[in-house]
Length: 479
Image (cartoon, rainbow, N blue to C red):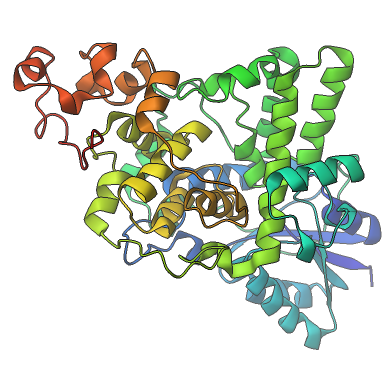
């Protein structure tokens, strides 16, 4: 009987620098790669009325899985695709092929670790081992200069320690060949309709909005192509420092986060290419900023590992039970739909709804507005980002919302954002707002961000009628 290992792909949808899959291929005579779509990922949240995973993220995931299947087929293998409960399906497949072990990547947040635990319980009576590999971060968990239980409370302290005392491991190669377990039906890639999406939602996802300056497609192949274009072909990496804060410059930002979120790109490969660019062409602050962003991503993941379910609760990491949050669904939905009457907030939210993406600066603006100006339950905002953002990953998303709600483990962070200041600094000409709020396109730059201050005569001259063509402001920002 040949030695067989089932490899369970999760948020590691790549062949390069994937230690778990590489070790499975090396250790086994035959490997069975599997991906399971869980219907619960796409459930509608009952109180809020939107999918847990929205159309843009679902589309990106399907594209990523399809690309992984093609890559495996090119190496002599295939990807077994199933829909259902992972623990049941994987245990049954492992038993069917008489697997010696199930290998997979290690996750840190509750839903994912619960599934790991359930799978382990099902495999034990079958005498099949479950082996998990840490493949998601820039710095390996075993290479940290401290126990995760002693994780520094501030990012500055964390960064100082890991950069001075830890090394980034070299990325591992993709396997040359995959020896597949034969005789197992590979299954079909599910359609979006199977997860409850309407024809209108699907049509929107299939026809990218022309206002998006760059469209992204899921998959390792696309991620590697973007990495090569961004760093080597177009050298956009040189201007990251200048473009990262803009609301409109999507084409000039890396977008690496989209492929990192599903594991289509390895952070260690990005780091290696950045360092090679520094050595061969140029050193500047932009490259350092991208590396800092990768370290931030690590910090959020290790924070989630340390604090567990606290990152998802209204009381947050700080376990602050004193602050009361409004559970006003009407306010929340005006925010989510970009109908607050505050142009910079609305433009960012409408862009998110149409494209599945928002700049980091935009996320700060809209989250601060929801929390600090409206006082609405921050977990609703985090859940909405989870649904809409193509680059959603639980640790970074919920970690950032903890920061914005002043509930993080960092005692020095205060995150109230001035919308007027950001508008003046990052959209002074008003072009970003005009792009996403065409009903305000005739307004001059000096008026577009404060349309709510226009007199009735000024409104008529600009073709705007507050309360009709554009919403009245949900709050008074002049107060």
